[in-house]
Image (tube, rainbow, N blue to C red):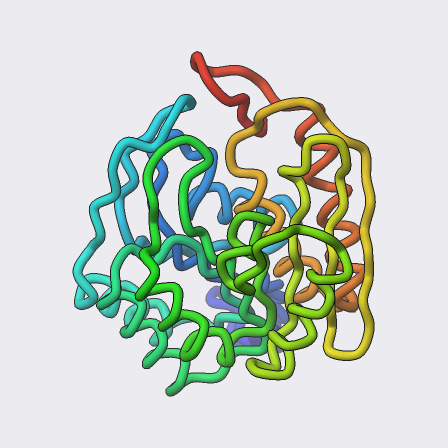
Length: 275
């Protein structure tokens, strides 16, 4: 952006051009993790790593440490509304990542908000439960999310456990998974990335863009690292906003997460953390 102004000491000296480069803004709507390894803080750190300015709207306070998540305290929908309203009045938001929502009321408010406003890219990480600890979504909330929120977002990024709940798969095999994903897209017109990081022997993700399946394989890193799902989905949003195609954004985001996992560090007695 270029602003024109006169010299304050000599108004007749001509116009001075001042160039201000304004970074694109990405928004995280998610929970607050006091370890900063996941949720809003992790998303904002990831956005910054890819050259964006990150802002965050907190939906809930998750009391957790490196070993487990103990409790979740949702914020009232009005508090979420106030946060989003003041941001939207001032900033142009180029993309949104949605993580933990916190409650049925919060879920309904976010659905209504997205129906009123259009954003270029919305990545939804439908976090159902913590790796070690509490559930974040009950069965009723999952159904509301599927029927009302999925059609409003660009892509959904469940892990295997979440995909099996969402797609109602009982036996995990690739052919059944593909058939269920096709039905999913037919119903919601939403892209889906199923993350296979919790497979014991393999490491693959499967992505369907509405026309074609992409299978991503990678090195199996034998570490428990906190926040990998959050960081992958926020990386995908950042790379898509940079102009990458969906499958290239996913491929590069996976490589970024793998590289960061290799450099993770232990700060407590449980999972390791991204640096």
